[in-house]
Length: 419
Image (cartoon, helix red, strand yellow):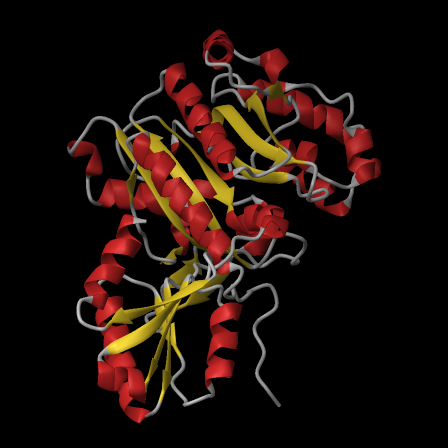
């Protein structure tokens, strides 16, 4: 019996990986232009990190984390999200001492034990960005400008920016109380998960995708109506900057976050192409998180983009693998050895070159070169080798010329790198 992969942990194959590489390279390009630097943190952290940051009663901590004890008895968890590990590294290595403002981004896998569905898996990948040290609304707007620019550059179709405010420790408690009172009157209409969340994590009820819960909470109180003066002013200024920068958005008063550390500005990039799980990027401000993790009192804001969902949306706009610049077709052992040496030298010069290694017929080699959509084919046989020449076929221009082997590699390198 063959061994198969674990459900919800998918292979990313050639033909698919090119889309991922494009999305990752675009992130490095865009984020770099906005002053962000890449950080890489382990995929395994101490479990207490996520309990302290996410909240003991969140679905992630209660139901979704991959947690185990190592041989020393320490409880370890495969990271379910990226912000808490980045903040742990930020605090541990005292990055705040290097610059009063830190802009960081990360790319990598996350893990949650939940039911796999379209664009949502147990091992999934995120591109995330964090800004630490600034609480000015201009930074909120700049983060949203960068996120919108990334989606415009990658041409991910059918996405729209939605924003909301979740208030702060000053105004959220009274809203939470009024929301619980509202939900308790409609408890019977809620699903079992939302009945459990009603007192422990009531804001998540507003995010439930079960139709009955959505209908029951249609008239639920909105956080935007109970913001304190500071949060209301902050949100108005964020919107003012977005308007001035011509960034399109809509306000979604039902938007919440699944993690407890979010405050004030929250946002999502949503799509109509993926069913109920419609967010392809999400984030917000987390001004108390660094303090709660034992660091200094510093504000922060960030987001994460779901790579699987973006790749799924770009799937029909598949990105072709790179075309070889040259295919070396050979006949005879001496010609094959000479062609192999040339191939290796050109590859070391950064030229994408392919050849056939197993002595197939010239017709079969040309057929493979055509399948690879090779730009040029070099045909080298024993007779050509003895005369110091080869046949160079230009596939795009549909013509063939006899060329001298001496100086050919330099000519190819010049033509290719100058193209």
